[in-house]
Length: 214
Figure 1: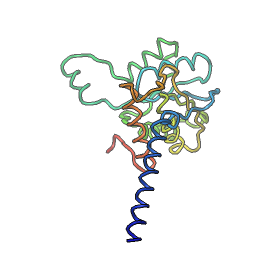
Figure 2: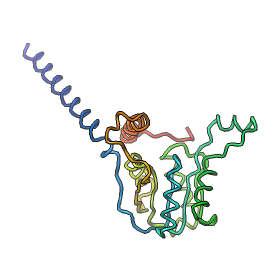
Figure 3: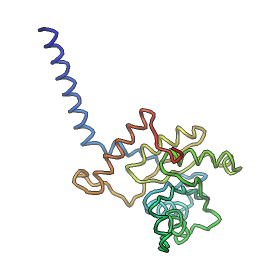
Figure 4: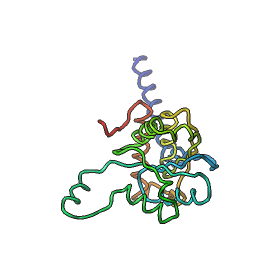
C-alpha cells in the first residue's frame, strides 16, 4: 500500500509540475519565442521566406546602410500555385513579389541575390544558404549577417542558422510591423502561430526537421 501511495504521490507531483509548466508557457510563450539581437552593421542581410513585411523591413535596413547586399530565400512552389498557372492565372511566385518589394523600396537589382530553390522550412533555408556560401566566392567575404524574420520566429531561426553555419555571426532581428497582442490566445492569427511555433521548437530540440528533399 505504501508503494502505491508513493506512486500516486509521484504522479500527482508530476501532474502538478506539468500544469505549472503549461501555465508558464501559456503566459510567457511570446517572450520565450522571441530572441532578438541588437541591430548593427553587417556584411549582408538575409530575408527568410514568409510574409511580405520581411522584404519591406530588409529594404529599409539596406537603405539605412546596415549592409551592402540582400540575400533572399527562394521558397518551394506548392502544387496549388502550379495549378493556377496551368489555368492561365498568372499569380506571381513569392520570391518574385519579394524581389518587387525590394526594388520598389530602393534596393538595386544587382544587390539582390537568391539562395535555394525549393526552401520549404527554416532548416532548408539555413542549409541552402550554407551551400551557396560554399559554391560562391561571396561566402568568404560575408562574416556577419543580419537575419530578418517575424518576431515569433526569431528564436528558432537564430538557433537553426547558428547551428548550420557556426562560422558566421548572425544578428537576428524582427520586423517592426507584426506586434504580438498582449492577449495572444484571443487573436485568431497569433494564437495558432504561437502553438505551431512552440511545437516546431520542441520538434527541432529533439532532432527533428522538415526538409523539401524529404
